[in-house]
Amino acid sequence: MTIRRESRALDPALPLAEAVRHVSAVFGPQYAALELSLVTPLAELALPSGQVEYRARAIERQSLRARLPVWVDVFVDGALYRSVVVTLAVVARQEVYVARRALAEGDTVTAQDVVLGVRDVAGLADAAIKPEALAGAPRLRGPLAQGQVLTVRQVAPAGMVMRGD
Image (cartoon, rainbow, N blue to C red; front, side, top):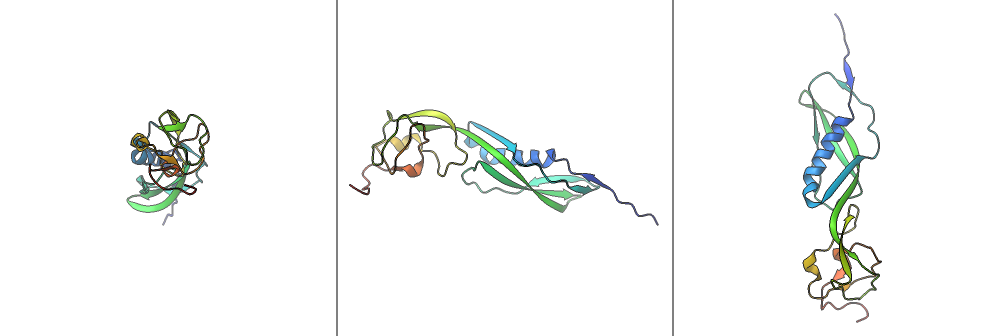
């Protein structure tokens, strides 16, 4: 009787490619440019011999964070062998409204106060405001610095009673 052990090292480029493919498919259409890179190297992993397949787990369609962990399941001969976490650094560029000048809380936001610019929106707490939201002279819920991206939660609809009114 002969006992033989066979294994090979996991090529870290393969789970990384699967994670990038999956994130690009889920979030890519929403942004003008999506740049993804590996934050930390993957741990060394020995795989048994057999047909290897990589499948990224579903990601919730939430706001995109600047660091995004993606679980990738490693299958050998159709059976789940191991799961690895691929942590990606995300740069998601999108055309957004940016404050042309500093604005105070309660100020009315007009087209003259903002300018369209392409910025990295990964990691923003809220979604960037849409052009139609500027109709009707909305007001700011808090101060906005020059160059800051205008988000949905920063703007109150016109006619809304705010603190101090």
